[in-house]
Length: 136
Image (tube, rainbow, N blue to C red; front, side, top):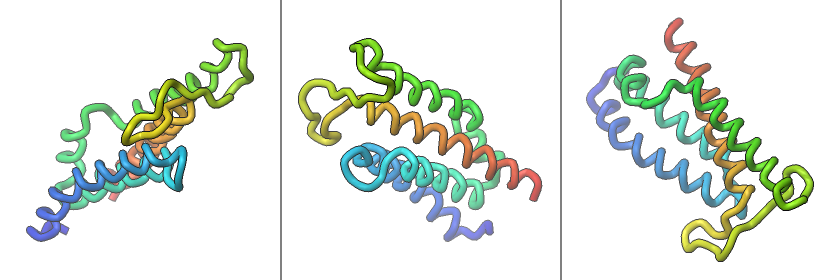
């Protein structure tokens, strides 16, 4: 699909979908959404771009290899689990820091865990989809 309408739509949808994925990530620890849904939205944005402009063009646009996002996300999730040990709390106990932020709400280890899930989902979905696109 290399139509001018699809390319133009994909060019403008990429930042909108990425912004929506971050919105879904940030609202997830209070309302439906979170790292998984946000990660799927971000991966969908890049997959749509690869359909419109080709896989090589999309790979040039992405700064890091998608496979590298998985261990980074696992590190964030692990840190969210280990952080309570510093305060003599059980593993994966939710810790909340300070006053609520205006757009995000309470910031704590749940958000750090969601960010980890976000990166793992983006990395795994893009790795699988880019591998399939290379074969086809």
